[in-house]
Every structure is written in C-alpha cells, then in structure tokens.
Image (cartoon, rainbow, N blue to C red; front, side, top):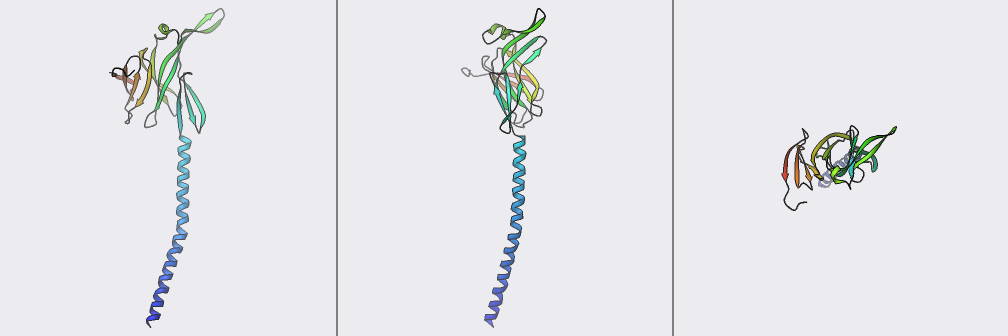
Length: 206
C-alpha cells in the first residue's frame, strides 16, 4: 500500500514538473522575441537620429556627420551689404538637451564686393596676414539649430578676442565661451542669447 502511494506521489510530481517545463518552453521564446524586437527598434531610432558635428577650422564651416557619412556642411560666414566676413570655426559643442549646437567663430578674412568696370568682384580687405583690417570685426559664438542644421543665432564677442572654446551648462541655461587673446570667459544666457557677464580668466590660462 505504501509503495502504491509513493508511486502515485512520484507520478503526480513528474506530471507537474513536465507541465511547468512545457509552460516555460512555450512562453520563453515569445518573451525573447519581443525583447529582441524592442532592442532592435531602439537601436535603429538611436542610429537614425545620431549626428556628429565637427569644426572645420580652415574652411569656416561645421561638418555634420550622419550614419558615418558627411551629411552637410554649415557655412559660418556672413554677408553684410557688400561685405562678407569669413570665420574660422574653432570649436563646436552640442547642448546637453540636444536642442542646440554651439560653435566659436574667429574672424579669419573680410571681403568686400567692388565694381571694376562692368564686373563686381570680391576683394579681400583682411586676411590672416592683415591683422589691423581683420580686427575691425568681432569674433562670434554661433548657434546652430540641429533640426535644420542652419545658423539660428549669432552672439558677438569682442574684436580680436580669439574665440576658442565653448561649453553649455548641464541645465542648458548658460553657455561659456573662452576668449584666448582677451583672457576672458563669456557667460552667455542660452535663452536670450545675450552676454550676461565677462569673467577674467586666471593669469597664464592663455
């Protein structure tokens, strides 16, 4: 009698274990499949939205890299009347929230259109070898809209400041730009795009 009871208990346990095993085997692949689909979808979203910004110092441009390829080049130069100011893109940073891209732009060359006979041609008024003419124009901090990859704001610094580097605070409220020759740090309001304060850099920081 005891042997029959023990045999019955063993049989019941075996059935229960087999049932749990079947339940686990039928549910686990579905869970793994869903998990893999979520990860794959998430990776595609990150990759499709990922862009890298590179300062092309010798070309007055910021390059945009997307999907490991050159996507666009943003020209930082500007035209005022007959005068075109070409900047050297020294440094570029993306704000922590990803809603803006900041670049320091140092005046590299100034050109003016002049009429010669029946033709209008650009004439260089200043370049890297002509400091007095070049330093009549202020350096800038340029803000780029990452949605359109175009210049959205320009914040003038001092003439001959030698705008070097820029960073944006973690709360996205302020940007800080260094002026190497001037020996100053500019505190810029990232909401109004105005200079709030100039902070003297420690001696020898140039």
